[in-house]
Length: 347
Ligand SMILES: NC(=O)c1ccc[n+]([C@@H]2O[C@H](COP(=O)([O-])OP(=O)(O)OC[C@H]3O[C@@H](n4cnc5c(N)ncnc54)[C@H](O)[C@@H]3O)[C@@H](O)[C@H]2O)c1
Image 1 (cartoon, rainbow, N blue to C red):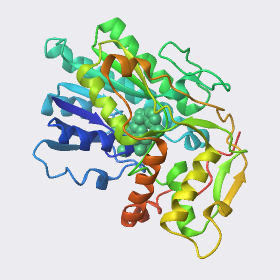
Image 2 (image 1 turned 90 degrees about the horizontal axis):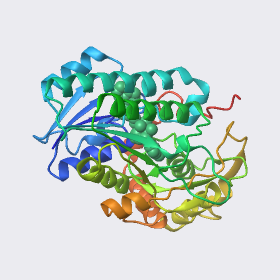
Image 3 (image 1 turned 180 degrees about the vertical axis):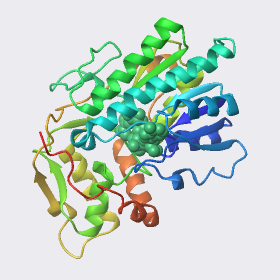
Image 4 (image 1 turned 135 degrees about the horizontal axis):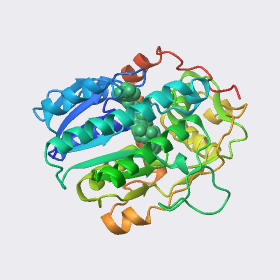
């Protein structure tokens, strides 16, 4: 398949690009190269004959039309987005522009291309979204594909808006779409402003390990390579018009997660005395911080046979190893605007 992947220089998009090439697909990676992008993430495939890069913005309709007519993809995998909740609290406008308006422009460019090419049933538009659109759970229950939308941050509201647009383009214009809503990802190439890389890199630098609130917020962690595998299954075998929830069934509180990372680092890079857990520091909570997310992945498991390949402990171990071995990668990103600062504290 020839895949047009948007956001392929980001964390999850680059995992999809690398895996798609390894599986024998052709890939056109379209990315605006925002602060969150890093072309090193796809350096391993950049010289591959099945790979092409297009520096373009999903808000630029003319650029999108040019990319479609140049490459004639069989499917779109749409991952480009503003993705950091804390940044969405400080500056929601960019999130609406890219996640809502950008998705609208991409849908319209896709529709024009798909229509001109004869409205093939085999074409796919795959929208990659988050479990955060479903809001916040209490101590019990899990999100299913039928869970009502209840977004509570500018980020999740903008993603919810984009999900609604994609469904509407299917119902109204008959575009063959599939959607996925996934839980928190972690793994190699995770941009150093998100919790897991922040904890690893602060620990290595002897800096405090910030935990929002009392650390009791629960997330369902998924190794990024397992997410990429699920996305490639959905784009190739998913049913048109259907959405799939993807989660690792690995619920941990933020405090448990950070303690696990500290224990791994204590083994791999022991301190002269004490433990990395001594660096844990509880800081003011994020406004509107959702208490708990948990995914019921029964549909993708039963219909497509997908299962995560690692437990969270195995995945965190691999992730720590990767950060220890790839210092040049993360050092270069630490100078980017906002990285290393506390963002999103204003209510
Ligand atoms: N990170 C997670 O845990 C998670 C979980 C579920 C779903 N998602 C979704 O997966 C997708 C990818 O997330 P990520 O963590 O890899 O994000 P990321 O921030 O690491 O990467 C986003 C990429 O999109 C590009 N981009 C941003 N605005 C663009 C624009 N206007 N035009 C073209 N490219 C643009 C950036 O340059 C970057 O390369 C997002 O849609 C996100 O909502 C993320």
